[in-house]
Image 1: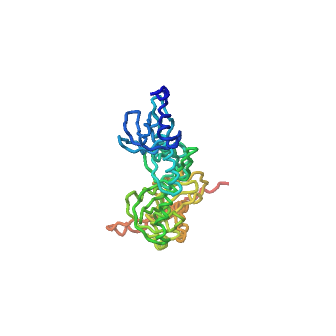
Image 2 (image 1 turned 45 degrees about the horizontal axis):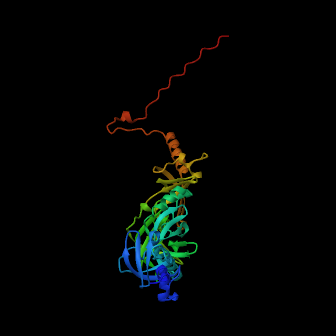
Image 3 (image 1 turned 180 degrees about the vertical axis):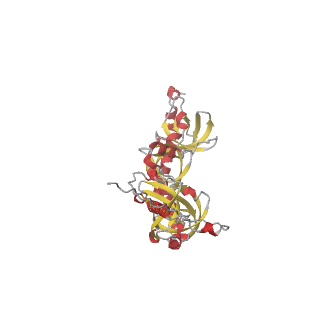
Length: 409
């Protein structure tokens, strides 16, 4: 063997044997068979041409394709070095997986396929998610109505707490932006929901009656699932004819309800429960009359007055101007939530579901009645066994007039 042969680089010898055209270059994707696996190294036979090694951080695969490798498995890897210190070709699952993962995301984006995103973290702007091993972002604005953080006053700490409650949960999403170069992945839960609705919504029209199951109750209403996995919103104002402050007082998750479709806006379905219930206001004038004095329970006090419950279905309003003859700065100074008072009915408007009440009118009548009763002569009680003498009007004796002493001149 010549000195040239002894000192020849293994790769050079390979080039001479197989030809330069068959030797991959840095950045190329190669395929092979796993021949050995250790904790931090994977050896790959590259079709008998040479042996490649994947080690350290290069084993990490974003596509998760090689997360459970075993000997004899076929693999693909990216060439990152032609010849290392031991004569092996340096390979990377990480780069190959990265490319494969982003190519797959690009395909899902173009096809509009719905994907499952696992929530891994949250910030005030939205949710950090993972599709496979690729980290992406789901903005707050792209959450569905059910998951959107409707926090009174916009308290940022409460919004963050709400968003963190989704950590480790899978959400159905749709990719709305993907860029491998900038490693940008944006997904939308709302878009995925719209896609789901479109497929089944065409079978329904406004006025249809449906039966469904309550899947969520929020401050502004309840969500009802019906038909082929469709979901509609029953706004708080459509739950019942009476005034409701908290939907949870009358409905809960799991309830089976009948509803009517009252609006279809693209993929948003609005439902009503009260449409299928008898309107108590149709016959309100048979039960209540203007000028009638009636007791009512204070449900809620606002700066402009108070809402009063007359019965389970009919609620009225006493305006601040009808609380007292005197100026009222705070209605709560005169009426308290949970307490019952007497009112006079001022107006009844069945068409608009309105009934006006007055507290001051009731107090005026009470005051007048008390005043009139004080001026009424007392009734003389007559005993059943009284004698005639006892029942006669008592005689009032008048003292005789005493003459004055004449003036002496």
